[in-house]
Image (cartoon, rainbow, N blue to C red; front, side, top):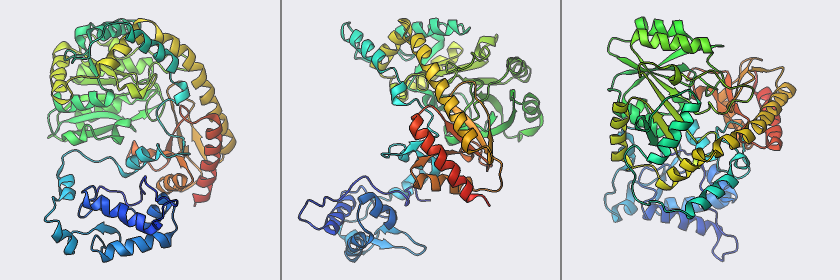
Length: 495
């Protein structure tokens, strides 16, 4: 298994203004990568097409440089295709036996991202790309002015630059306790853990609460399938189907009673009940009560991901699962990454105090605490009413963008697809209906044309029909251009 992606280019270009020929600049660049150990023996270079495109040179210039490097014994072609950093020959002998980092990469226990996820993570930072699937706010929707005020306030008061206590800033946890109470959740500061975003909370839970070989239940499709926080910890994923009201309770009961291998213990259900990622659905009030009752009867715990709860557009979603929790079986996870700013890297976990202390201890072993400056800023964000004011401004703008994307869907996709109208969050779950089409081919074709989409199989490995579209990031102008191109590309690929 090779973890480099030969389809990707590099972020360097030769300089035509230099007296040194372009092919010689390329030779020196690649040889320096090899001799400094950044590209080790066995590393697969990007394809010649990708290299030439990213470097801005014609193919013949690149071929000249590659031929010279191959003659020098620095790179070599292998049977089956591809060009690799040489692991043999005089160059390797002259530099002695190098560590086999490729083998080390394969031996590491944490799973790599899916290939398309790796492509998405890189492509999001390409200049000019239209991001039709990105799950974050556009920069112009973030509260930049509010945070300038907060930072000015912080500059005028004494603050700590030291480590904070294991569970995080007491001031922030007190502010969060008050905020959560407005959502119907009673959580004292001692029952709150500050984390560096939801991903850290998931990682802490996977290594701190669940034994290897246990099973996590979750909605299918689900965001959790697109990351490997649980799988890398040796935990199995068991998907439960959804319907219009959310997680299918009877199917959950059937799975708990009959569907799990005897070797698996099921102790946790992960759910996104409000504005689900990727489907945008909302679990009904009745379904939430049924889920709490089922969890109590079957003896399972629930991890409630509330990342999108504040992003309602038409009306607030029903009361959270944690607000209905009378016996401490719901862990409630929140974040500022979706509604405010992903760059803050700040979230929180609410749960029974022994659980919070256990996870806080593990967190101290990994990063010794979330940024104290970010926590002080977040404390002011909640305590001084910035959050409420920001949401009052954000919701109308997101509503306009949602409605505009729905209008574009009606204009360009009526004959080939169907979709939902989300009541909040970021996402529209689109299903192609016009015939057989390869979503993977569609993803790569759109990417070549500068449009980035999120295929449904990232959230359900067997999904061959869906896309997750987001109206939160692309500007209206980008959205129209991207949706028109997406529709045309899909129509060209239908069989």
